[in-house]
Image (cartoon, rainbow, N blue to C red; front, side, top):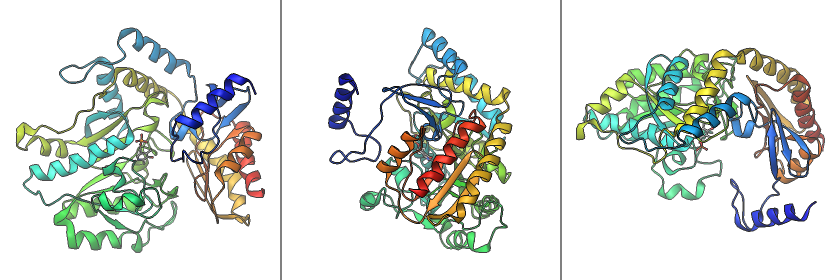
Length: 428
Ligand SMILES: *Cc1c(COP(=O)(O)O)cnc(C)c1O
């Protein structure tokens, strides 16, 4: 190891927090020097095949010529300008593209800078909508357990209350309503028990509920659970019946990851409000958005205060992020991502399904370009990371979950190396 690099890592360890890590007892970190395609290159020269797409984002792989070109061209024009009183072509073009891909009833967009903020905005929209309809008591949210919606306070308040991440903040969070997560698997017919608790709560309390918020079909960081799309159809009907808005958080599932452009397409159901982020810029920059249908935007607009929607981040509609997002969506619009995701899904099924019989394994789940192995016990992250790096792959387990969601451009051999390493870890 070269001295320079050791110094950098020492500074990192002393001074920099990483996501969900301890400063007292930090997990080892690996220094990335560059990346291209599906490979991360470490500063010591080793190359790792990336199984995580940098947390769902790098769907086209790293260092993509079209995304690089879009970023460079936009930097030459303007990297950022305030969105108050000013607009620009990248934000407008991107909105048009998003509405070509999103469920048709959504036609209003609010840009923000991270997924968590887009969830805050969605919650605010729902509450402000009912306030403007003279129903100020409708302020609570209903959600299913095992969800993950982000780390800010509003988003935390609808994350699974028990899975440990936010337990200590319980006392200062708004109290929302949780029902058990659906148990029916993706391709099984929905059971009544999946929807009964939602119906019960709505029958009792819909006069205080602003919206239901869920991650459609795939629950991400809250447990990597995959459930029947029929649940979404039922949620839509119940929301309509009880005058409650429906929010889909497509931040992880959006842009093709589950085999459809958006996961709600598995059910053919549109929400009133939808959050997008993560893969929106192909993993280049932090950008998110909250989409709304006409009913929601008209409802908010009908309120006092001239119908002003009360939010406006400093970096709203950042031109650089919008230009790269536009290029990323153009790749999706012109490319054959569906074939790639189907190919990845087929291989994940054939490689991972046999591991369901492994003594360490509780369950194996695959949908689109997502492969999940749930173990009986929690995985030692530091040991697992060291093993994976020695096998030339980058996979980061979480709790009992060993999972991958590789870039769509990954080829069969590289994908085999990922699944072989997953199987290898189980044997360790
Ligand atoms: C990652 C994620 C978020 C939060 O997004 P950030 O950009 O990390 O703030 C919210 N909801 C879901 C479903 C996510 O996967």
